[in-house]
Image 1 (cartoon, helix red, strand yellow):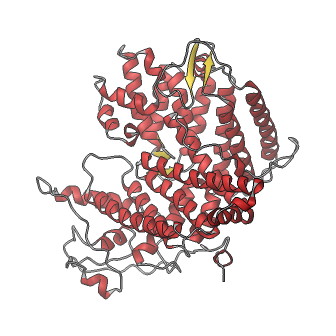
Image 2 (tube, helix red, strand yellow):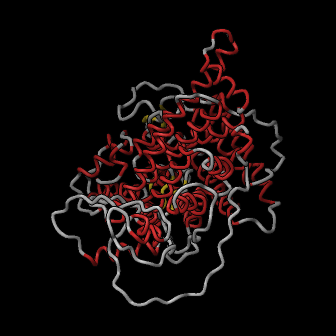
Image 3 (tube, helix red, strand yellow):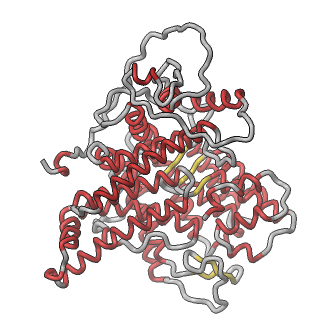
Length: 562
């Protein structure tokens, strides 16, 4: 049976928690401070209530319980023995961070108990954090994860992501000297990542419609894997690699239209992929463009090229027709954001301060003094689509269902925030004009951000989201509002939210703008700093003699490595 027919579209992960068993007591015994990786990770999920006997190379307890022992973490040579109290504290934080997760049950995915556990973690924890009502999360639930049952490369990539996300939950901040648990997570994640890469290389040698799409999906999972680990440069490499595959498919389709007889065997396979799976390729492209657009905002350089060929025709819907769902509203809003992004040329002119700002290729170089016209026609079209979207969104909110799903309700809040952000930003001619905005309106925008990131738990855990909505908007306001009170409030909100949206990390932004604020108050800020990209600005701020602990924290973050 063809692989495409075997892969279910939905319903693969209909998982119910197992009933709670009566609590058992055990005899008092000394705690195991080390152990095999299988023991270390499974005890964090309360899946095993026994200690590891630490026999090398594989512990007897794993053999007895029929678990595949994953061996022991490779520890670097240390100059002094670690403090047992520190290790105990680290283990306690690890266990606390996952007490809300559903315990493991039997899954169909092949592999060890630990591998199935990490695969399950992605479904039950990682993907829900993406925002269950978003199109990106739907692709994960309906296609990427089910495909992991049939493709070893995707399976190991998802497992690596699960391990990396578990490490992120334990400690989302970069440390100069990683803890024992961080090293164990990193070693195990790297092992499965290498397996996924090895499998992907093999399938790339045999291009077929299935293998081409598996390759693209692997790239997407690798992007998430490297991003959650803080390896932003590697994540960008995977984004560009996947984009090249999509561009090759596009070029093959164009050649097929002009001269089909000139196609090679591999190009014919690409053409077949485009013809039979165009809608699916559009969904995959949507993920690349969404994450690429967010990355481009951060580094101010092109990451993903124009892939508009893989865009489904937009339905001719009247602006008086409300959206049918939150999902449709988000999908249409992403198209509007793409139009705004493409409406600019290389830079735009800020008439309020007679200055220029770049979006991509200018980088840290100062633009020419002579004004260059932006694409006003494209901007007007994008703005018209935004107004039409707002009209449909307002109509949709007037007839909301009484019992909305929590995921839909959360996504609705996020859309309201994005709508408010674009409305405020579009009122100004450029970033420098933001200081002339109504500060009460900007404070209300921060209120909305706080409402979105407020958690039901007393001790909120870190969150990794795919879509960059809140963090870049708050960072933008903080950079250009020139209001110390508002800047201080935004810095506090960013620091408290423990949120990474793609490559936009709230802690990194809080540390960066803390240094920027201190530099301004200490008369160390220079006008030329306004021309720097955020990674360059972060490196420059850490080199300033600003007396704050955030300079040390920022110097070791992924942002400064870009």
